[in-house]
Image (cartoon, rainbow, N blue to C red; front, side, top):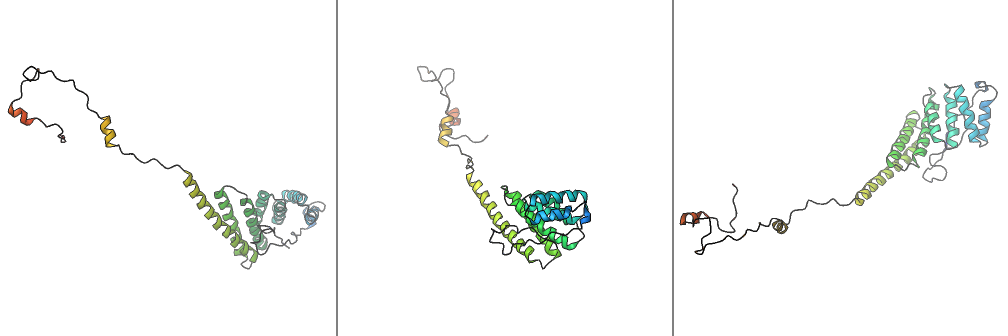
Length: 238
């Protein structure tokens, strides 16, 4: 019989209505390796010695690289020891199996494993990407077995978590934006300050002869006086 890893959130997560029960590992013929290594790996697993079981299955996989069943069992033992990266690698080999039931179980377990990998991730974008991969693997399992209630339940669970994560990301972006200092606006020059900065240069008073005429300049006639601009008159554009 094919077994599955534990539910994606464990027994402590009340949102998972039905955790995945622990069934027996895949039974392997003793002729796969010298002695009774597969049986020993299985006994270690049943006794809760998951590290010893994983080490044994890993050695068996190295000797029998084309046996997807061994890869599946190695992935399951790795999952139990919380070595999720190794579990991901072995379950990925399992989905390549021509055995469709084993392939479906491997997709399901990949969904569990990827959720666990993404759960402690502090980078929200990486967490989202990993959980999206988790959801996709549950969807792949359902394509092979639409009656798989556990895969459907976990898919819905992960999708809810993704929605919560997206809201969290939006809230974080808003908070980061609020923390940024306001950008200075383009200040317009104060006309009074501009006038102060553009004070006309002081001219020295011109000497006048006793008759009141400016020195060095002939007295203005009537025609010249008319063409002179009055003080305060603005200049037009030339």
